[in-house]
Amino acid sequence: MTILVTGGAGFIGGNFVLDWLAGSDETVVNLDKLTYAGNLQTLASLHGDARHVFVQGDIGDRALLAALLAQHQPRAVINFAAESHVDRSIHGPGDFIQTNIVGTFNLLEAVRGYWTDLPAAGKAAFRLLHVSTDEVYGTLAADDAPFSETHRYEPNSPYSASKAASDHLVRAWHHTYGLPVLTTNCSNNYGPYHFPEKLIPLVILNALAGKPLPIYGDGQQVRDWLYVKDHCAAIRRVLDAGRLDETYNVGGWNEKTNLEVVNTICALLDELRPRADGQTYATQITYVTDRPGHDRRYAIDARKLERELGWKPAETFESGIRKTVQWYLDNHDWIKGVTSGSYRDWLNQQYGA
Ligand code: NAD
Ligand code: TYD
Image (cartoon, rainbow, N blue to C red):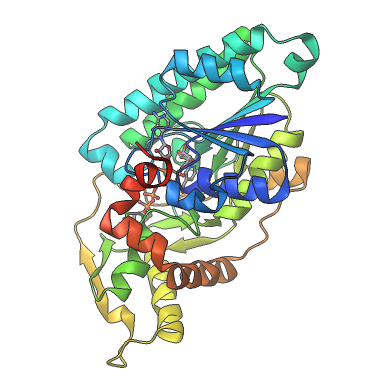
């Protein structure tokens, strides 16, 4: 059996591929465009492993997708591929429209073509799992209930609007064409292999480099943090047993303000790698201009996933953030590759031109 993963050289997709092959011998075909966010060094431990087939390409390339699907006959497609950084979407929304909306449309059409021609048993067993975000629901006030699956879509950034559009396309391809789809909407992830322009890895690496720790606005925005391996476990569970055309919210029950997150990281670094001058890393905190349209609070009600499929996060924020900080202290080569930009040469270095 085989699964096709898109965006499997990114943060969550990369963790998913590693975890999948640690627990299964089912081949993973990994289609990734290798944008700035795609990093094959994350998958270096799989080099030479016949269970991992890497293909550099775009989910918008319908002909390539059709060829891969015909060749590998996957029983499932899991779509991680996306432009994912809100700040980048504010500076340049075009790539978000192209990959997250047009790309998802092309993926759906290629998968529909493949699925339509499958024999009855394969057709019934096939799944397309679309990985999405809680940001499609917009923002919450401090005393609002967390987002449930029936919360209205109210996206506020070009990123979240493009993800919302992709969710709607996935839903429509089920209702109109019967494509067997599942959608997960997850809260903010953190953990190993996270590209250091997102808050948590940025703060760890800036702290160690003696640089400022930038807090947007007043730092009181709330995110519901989930350790990435818990997210990967939730996706495996939904793929195994999720009800067709259902959406499942995935979250960690870990609401923290950004300032709390940054102070927690500083305290862990003070313990694990104290500054030479004896001062706390928290002295590097710097308040900077807020992000335009910054959503104030995200929080996920993950009870449906627990009730129907028995999934619960294994990590608390305290255990997960400690593992994450330790991972960044221990993985110099990966960090050097990312911070120097040399990870972008990895494909040529590793596989030849
Ligand atoms: P990421 O930016 O780290 O990785 C995205 C990957 O997709 C990269 O490897 C990139 O090269 C690839 N990619 C981009 N455009 C592509 C295209 N057109 N064709 C093929 N590959 C392409 O993102 P991530 O944080 O790993 O997020 C993965 C998915 O999970 C995204 O769909 C995102 O919206 C969703 N999500 C992320 C979070 C989070 O906190 N990071 C939370 C909830 C949902
Ligand atoms: P981010 O990791 O970009 O995720 P998202 O915007 O998708 O939630 O940011 C997490 C939170 O941290 C968000 O409220 C913005 C804030 N933030 C900062 O305060 N400073 C920073 O330098 C970054 C990158 C983010």
